[in-house]
Image (cartoon, rainbow, N blue to C red; front, top):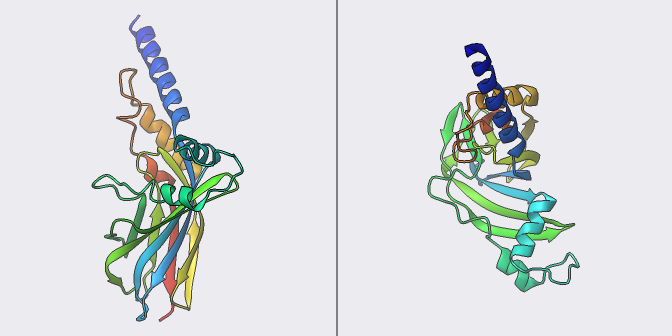
Length: 218
């Protein structure tokens, strides 16, 4: 009896875990990254672009009553009204972008210089974030990771490059998705049927981090 009860609970928990796994992520974003250097060859900030998936883009447009003629083109007034729609960040939100030098986290400002466009049924927003102080890379790699800790949003780092300096190399790295999926499943296996699906979803997003490494000569 005890074995059967435990087995039943395990099956229920596994079913809940499977449902939670299927519910995440909700949003899919193709991200772009530009590392901006100053005149002295120091990294001063990151220009970040987010292209939302078709479904979320349609939601953003229709909820605001934009593009009522469905021609896929926004008027200048419509575009202006959409600009900054995703920039009202809560205090402490890291912007799903993390920078490190020699494994030391680098602080980034909040978003500025917003932009938005709408093409081919997709909304693309852009913003700029400054480092607290210009960063001299020396011989080290500047690492920029893109991920949502709660894995509500899934990111693909589609493109990364530098601006303002020559002699730099940018390498992109994808996560080991099999290992990340296992991390997710292991975390979900600890859930019970009474756990709140969204409020308590395990912070496994780092396992799915997309990464750019920037190294520069000299």
